[in-house]
Image 1 (cartoon, rainbow, N blue to C red):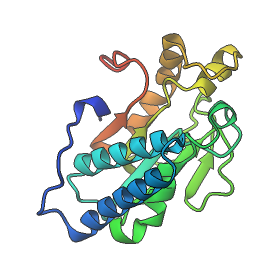
Image 2 (cartoon, rainbow, N blue to C red):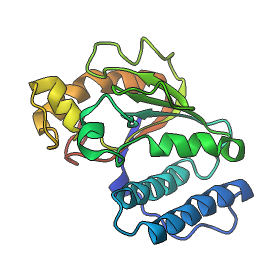
Image 3 (cartoon, rainbow, N blue to C red):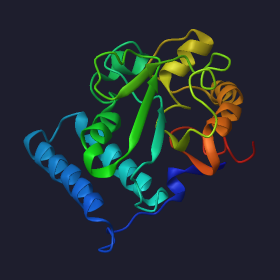
Image 4 (tube, one colour):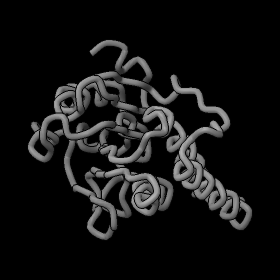
Length: 213
């Protein structure tokens, strides 16, 4: 398993040799982002959509733009309700990436699964409500070598994580100690459910967290 932080991935203009379907999806999301920002220049969602576009481009690069048949697991994908983020930030941390990948699956061929402690029952994508601090939470739900890519965007600095560990609820980020506790529980499980030599892509939290396993 390789562990890569999104800061270590540089993205540039899309290569003209990329597959037509990938061009279509990248163009489609950018067109929607520009249209939304023009109509809602001060919306909190502008931030969320910027993150979506950036993270999506990095996923494409990680997969070398070969998306057909790839299986992606998104840890802490976001939810409408049931977690601290949805309480304090309303729209910003809903599962926008999961909704986008599901809506464009006919073009990309990606098989996506989202996991969050919040309520995912109303989502169209394959979502599982799960407490990632519980022992064997991932290995009890997924088989070995099931995924090509495991991703997380705000897992290790999540306010919800801090609430679960310290019983302190606020909009503040999780502490480094809480991130270490979560890492100790899920990292061995991620390694089991990932295909050999594939990637855990993460962002959010102290970049020193995965300097050594």
